[in-house]
Image (cartoon, rainbow, N blue to C red; front, side, top):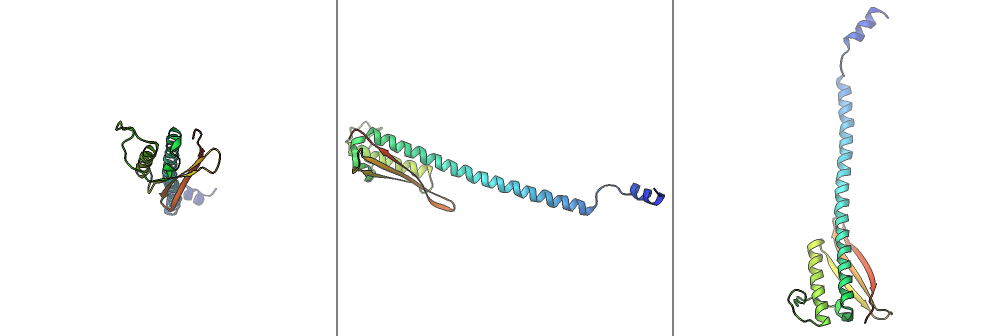
Length: 155
């Protein structure tokens, strides 16, 4: 090793400006990737929450229909606040169905964006069935839905 090459090795200390800039670019690209993953996880969490609310609401609808199996086609009608549950009022099957629909509509509006519940009664099959559909809107995906069909015995 000559003294000239030895003196060059001794004089070079630290990083050059180009190396620092390349490291910053690589770090920036990595941070942008992490930020993108964070945004996607937030969107997936929101979608999961909406689906959970829809499934829970559909289960509540199914349970209320099973508790009032003779209401039949009344569950396909309009809702009305007849105070059947908390008011101590003795309601008919149709009034109870209207009260249930009123409560579902409130729950759907409170827990889902543009939430709606529809019930279709089909008495052409044995046992009769109810098709329950919960719909809501998500950013970029309007008209999402969750649907179940339940048979109801005891009519």
